[in-house]
Image (cartoon, rainbow, N blue to C red; front, top):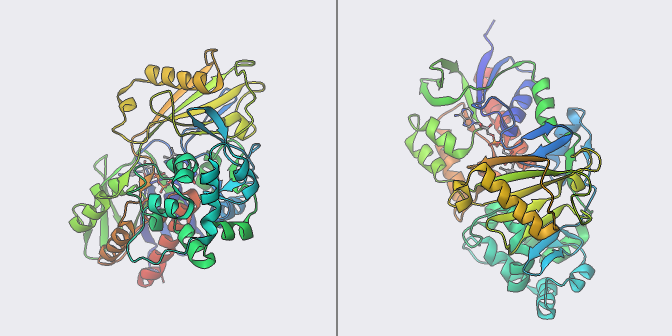
Length: 456
Ligand SMILES: Cc1cc2nc3c(=O)[nH]c(=O)nc-3n(C[C@H](O)[C@H](O)[C@H](O)COP(=O)(O)OP(=O)(O)OC[C@H]3O[C@@H](n4cnc5c(N)ncnc54)[C@H](O)[C@@H]3O)c2cc1C
C-alpha cells in the first residue's frame, strides 16, 4: 500500500482553510497539516464577540456576484445575512452627503439619483452621463485606476465620489495602482459593452454584499469544524521552507522540522518571501516587492440614547475629514442585525491607510480619543463609549501596483521550477474573500493535478 501523501498548508486565513477544504474534499489519500502562526485562525477575517457586541476587526462583508464565498457558505450549511441598510454617505467639508442610491461596484446602476446628488455640479453630472460615449481603451500600456476613472467619468466624479469609494477598495496612490490587476472586471465590462453605465444597466441586481449571523468568523469556525481530517496547528509559524530532491521541509518557530511532498503557501506575500528565501531568492524578491496597505480599526460601543441621529446607512467614507487620519466609519449595528445589545449602537472608525501614517505611533488611548472626535464631528456623539477596542493591521490589503500582472506571471514561472509548491491568497489575483477562496481552490487543484504521480 502506498503511504498517504503529506501536504503542508502555511497560513490559516480564509485561503489556507479553503485550500484544506478542497484538498480534503478531493477524497485523495492525503495527510494535510495546516500551520498558522497566530493562536487564532482567520487572518484578516477576525470577529470578536463580547457582551452582545459583534466586532469585525477585519473584513465585514463579501460580495455574492463572485460565487465562491456564497457557494462555500452553502456547502457548510451557513445562511447569509443581508445588510439592513443599503445607502452610505460620503463625508466631505459640508458634512455627511448621501452617496447617490444605486451606486454599486463603483458604477452607478441608476442615473436618476446621480442627477439629484449634491456631490456633483451640473457640469460634473453631464460629464458622468457622457461616459456612454467614451470609447473603450485601445492603448497598449497598463492603465492606472485614476486614469481609467477620470477618462470614463471625468475628474469631478472621480474626486468627489469614486476616489473615496476606491480608497476603501484599494487605498494608496490611485495613479500608481493597476486597474487591470485590481479591478479587471471593469476592464472586461468596458471592452464587452463599450461603457460601464450601459453594462451596469443590463446587470443591475441591487446589493450583493452579505455577511453571516455572528459575523464573518462564523465561516472560519465552520471551516475549522469541517476540517476533521486536517491537522490544524495554531501558534506554529513557518520560518523556512527548503527542498531536498522531491521532498520539502518546513522549519517551524519551535525548531521542529516537518517533511512534506507538497507545500501550499497561503501566507501573505511578504511572509511567503521570508520563508521561501533560501529555496528561491528570485521568487522571494518578487514576493517581497508586493506592497501592502495598513489600517487601524477602532470600535466604539454606545449605550441607549447616546447617538443623537438616526443611523440610517451602512456608514460613510471620508473624502475630507476634520479629524486626522479617519478614512471611513462603519455603522456596524445599523449595517447588520445582532451586532450590539438591544438599543445600543456599535460604530467602527477606520484610521490610517499606510504604515507611515502618524496614527500608527499613537497608543490605544489616543486612538480611541481620535475615533471619538471623529464620531463627535460626524454624528454629534458626545457620550462616552461603554466599550472600546483597537486593532492595528500593520499589513492589510495588498496593493496591485502598475506591473502587478507581469510580476504575478514571473512568480508563477518561478514556482514551476518547484513541483509541488503552490502559492495562493490575496496577493495575487484579487483580495476579496471570494477571490481568495477561488485562488485556494485553484491552488489545491493544481497541486493535485501537478503531482498526480504522488496522489494516484
Ligand atoms: C481591515 C481589512 C478589511 C477588509 N475588508 C474586507 C471586506 O469587507 N470584504 C472582503 O471581501 N475582503 C476584505 N478584506 C480583504 C480580505 O479579508 C483578505 O484579503 C482575505 O481575508 C485574505 O485572506 P488570506 O487567507 O489570503 O490571507 P490572511 O487573512 O492574511 O491569512 C494569512 C494567514 O497566514 C498567517 N501567516 C503569516 N505568516 C505565517 C507563517 N510564517 N507561518 C504560518 N502562518 C503564517 C497569518 O497569521 C494569517 O493568519 C479586508 C482586509 C482587511 C485587512
